[in-house]
Image (cartoon, rainbow, N blue to C red):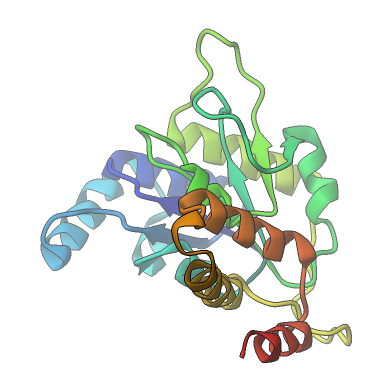
Length: 233
C-alpha cells in the first residue's frame, strides 16, 4: 500500500490535483504535513472547498486526508519512506534512485510505503529528506528541473502502479522494523546525549541529520531499538 505525503503544501489547487492523480492510479491515502500557517479550522475548511475544484471525482481522497504536525507523525505507519527532489537546489545527502528503478526498490516491502513531496516553492529540505531511505528523481530538462506538485504525484503514481508494485501488510513473521516515529524518538535521544558530551563541539543540525540517516539506513528492528535504548541509559 502506498501513502502520499505532501509536506508544507500551499496551494489548494495543487492538493486537489494531487488527489485527482492518486485517484487516476488507484491510490487513496493522502497525508498533509504543516499544510498552512493561518487559523487552523478556518484554513482546513477553505482548502477543502478550494481543492474540490481540481479534485475532480476524487473528493473522497480530500475528505479522508489526514493532517499532521510533522513527518514522523505522518509516516508513523510506514515501513519505507522515500522522498522526491529535483536535485537542483542542494547536493543530496541520500542515495538517489532513478524513477524507473523505484518499483524494484519497494517491491515486496513489508508494510506501507510513504512517498514525500515537498512544498511547491522550496521542495523538501535536507532535514526533511533525512527521514527518507532514498530520493526519487524524475528526469527533467536542466533548464526547467522542477515540476508542478500534481504532475509529480501523477508521474510517480503511474510509475509505481503501472508496474504492479505490491507491498505486504499482513501475516509476516519477520521481526517488525522500527517505524519513522520510533526512529525520530531515538534520533532525539542520541542527539541529546551527544550534545551534552560534545559541548561546544556539537555539530548542530548537520549532526542531527547524520544520526537520523544512520538509523534509517540501519533498518533496525523493534528489538534492536530497545537494545539501543538500554545502551543510552
